[in-house]
Length: 90
Image (cartoon, rainbow, N blue to C red; front, top):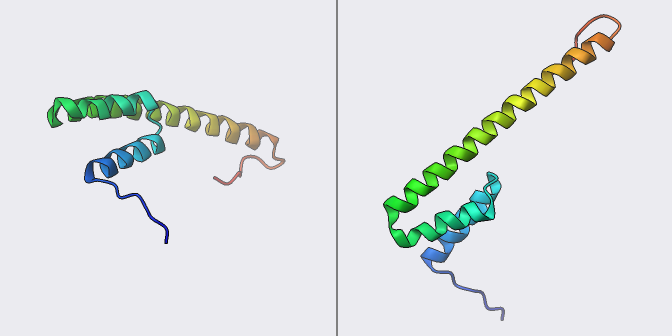
């Protein structure tokens, strides 16, 4: 019979934060900063998390704008290469 590890509520919450943080691109040090703030209380942890989340959202918005600009440039260049003008599908 296989035995499994039983995780406490706190351990499950920490694992969830780590996995979700990595999925949205947070660094390990950012995740650690949020987890370490747990000792300082919920208000401190929430404030740190909000600051880190805000920085990540700004970075993602900038990346999105850069991707949009690259797509526009590629569509324009592709349109110039087509014999009958731009009709490249999105």
